[in-house]
Structures are given as structure tokens and as C-alpha cells.
Length: 97
Image (cartoon, rainbow, N blue to C red; front, top):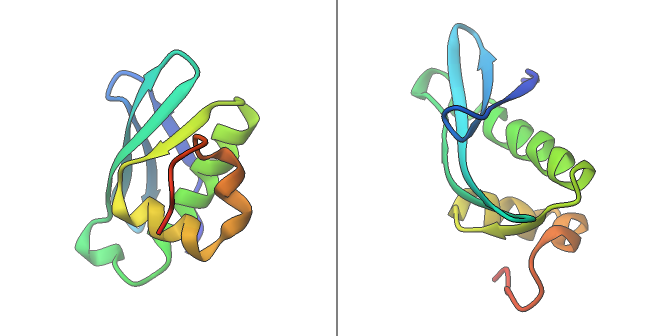
């Protein structure tokens, strides 16, 4: 399940539309740091890879923007743990366990 993310700066969240529903990943930006705080995938999209696809695209955007990541959302932290190539974005000293 692959949609394209958009950065809704007014709501401080990335969004991805799929099958008539919208998944979202909320964030806070302070200076050159981004805190990913909450991922929400509507029930009709659950188990279809929408959350993982959205997180991957968000991490790609963070990488392009050269931001430092603080993953407060457990789903994002688990994604990074399973895909360690993204640890490079995480603020030094934060352990993804």
C-alpha cells in the first residue's frame, strides 16, 4: 500500500491518503530538530503497510531536510529498530531499544 505523503504544516503533521482514509504522523519542529510524536492509521488501512510506508517517506523527507530526529512515537521507534539504516537521523545519545 503506497500513497504519497504531504506535510500539513498548519496541523504539524504528515498525511497520506489511501482508500478514502487519511493516515497521519504528528510532529513538533524546534530549530533543526523534529520530534515525531504520534502515528495514526485509520482502522480500514490497518495491516496494509500504510503506517510503515508513511514512516519511511517521512524519514526520507527528514533526511533531505537535514533535521535531527527525536522519535517519541513508539511506532516510529520500532520502524527504526527494524530498519537500522535510519538510526543515522536519530539524535546522538538516544537509544532505540
